[in-house]
Image (cartoon, rainbow, N blue to C red; front, top):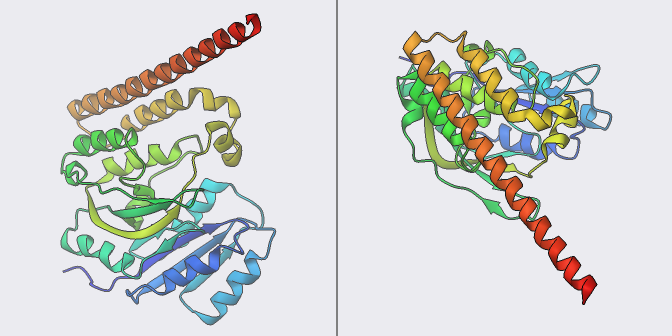
Length: 301
C-alpha cells in the first residue's frame, strides 16, 4: 500500500523574481498536503531575489533555497530543482504561477491508486497579457494506456492542439524515473521532453483547475535568445525537434514493431506542421500581393 502522506517536492526555478516569488511561495506553503518541500533554484539573480527567498526560508523549514553563483541557463536551472529535491513526487512551478490549496493532494490521489503512473496532470487556467483568463478540459484517455506508442501518438497529437488542454511539464511526476530522463537545451525542448514522458509510463489527468499560469506567445527567435541557442535554429525548429525524437526512439525500450509505429507518428507530426507552415506562408504572400495591388491602384488614381 503506497504511503498516503509521501513527501512531495515543489521545484521553483527563478531568475530576478523578487517581485513575483512571494505570491507563488504563499500558494505552495498553503497546500493542504502537509508533507511538503519547496526547492527554490535561484539562477544567479541580480535583483533582491536572494534576500526575499532567504527571509522566507528563515521562517519556514519546508523551504530549501539554492543559489547558482552564475546563470546556468533556463533548462539547467529547471533540472537543478528536480535533482536537489528529495520527495518521492515532484512538481515544477513557474515563479509567476499560483496553485490552488488542493493542487498537491488532488494530484497525489491517482498515484496512490495506480503505481504504474509516472505523471499526473491537472487542468490549468492561463492568463494572457490582455488579462483574459482561458482554460479548456482535456477529455482523452490514451495517455493512460499501457501501450507506450499509443501514449506517444496522443502526446504528439496534443502538441498540434491548443496549449490550454494539457501541460505535462507542470504536472506532478514520480521524481526518480523522471529525473533520470536526459534533456537537451534546444528549441521546443519542452515538447520533446513531453514525448519522452509519454514513453516513460502511463499518465492520469485531474479535470479540475488546480493551477494558474501566465501565458504569452513568443516568436521562436526570441525563445532562442532566452535559451541561449543559435537563432538560426528557429528556421528549422520542427526538423530539429523531430530529429531529436527519432534519436530518442532509437534508445527507448521498445520492440522493433513499436519503434516503427512510433517513428511513423513522428513523421506524421512533421508532415502536419510542415503543411501548416506552407499554408501560413501562402496566406502571407497572398496578403502581400493584395496589398501591392491596392498600393499600385492608389498610385494610379
